[in-house]
Every structure is written in structure tokens, then in C-alpha cells.
Image 1 (cartoon, rainbow, N blue to C red):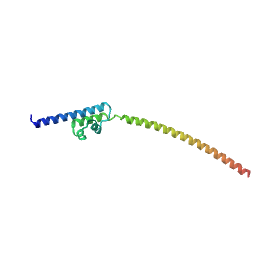
Image 2: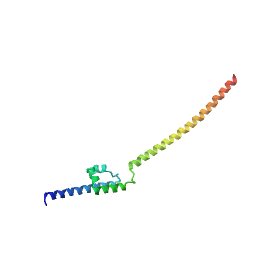
Image 3: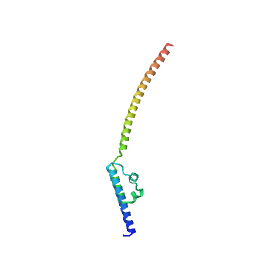
Image 4: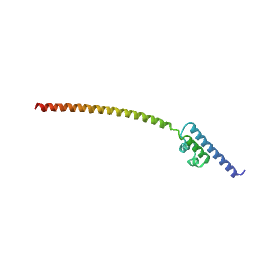
Length: 127
């Protein structure tokens, strides 16, 4: 075996190791219900962006994982939604309280206008 063949063998082995490392990372992310994305895989594996897009084996793994996760909701998004719903409920309650207070003030205003009107009539009659 000459140097060229050894170099080819070494490059092939390194490539296979990279593919194995990438597929393992993808499968781990799927099992841990972590969103699979190329930037996250780059960070976990140390492999380049181009590797994930150009390697057909890895690309098919990524596509399959993303398709599997298509309906999956990010847990943080669920927590944010719950917090928003709670805040919406509090704001709705506050709106109801303000509407009730506004109604009461309108009724009180009407009573005061009637009282003022009666007082004015009494003053006019006394003249």
C-alpha cells in the first residue's frame, strides 16, 4: 500500500467518523426532544455548516429528524403561552372591573345632575 492509498484510507475513516458523530448527535437531540437545527448541531459536534448540508447521509438524517419534530412544540414556547394566558386573564378581569366602576360613576353622575337640577328649580321658585 503506497502513501496515496493510506491517505485515502485515512480520509475515508475520518469522514465516516464525522458522519457517525453527526448522526449520533441528531439522534440524541431527537431523543432529548431538543429542536434539531444545523447551528445547534454545529455547536454540539464542531463540524462545519457545509458538512451538514453537503453530506447526503447526514442531510437525510436531519430532514427526517426535522420532519419528525414538525409537530413538536418548544417547551419554552408552552411556558410563555401559559404566562401570556394568565396575563390576558388578569387584564380581562381588570377591564371588567373598570367597566363596572365606569357604570357606577355614570349612575352617580346622573343622580348628582338630577339633584343639581332640583336645587336649581327650587332656587328659581324661590325668586
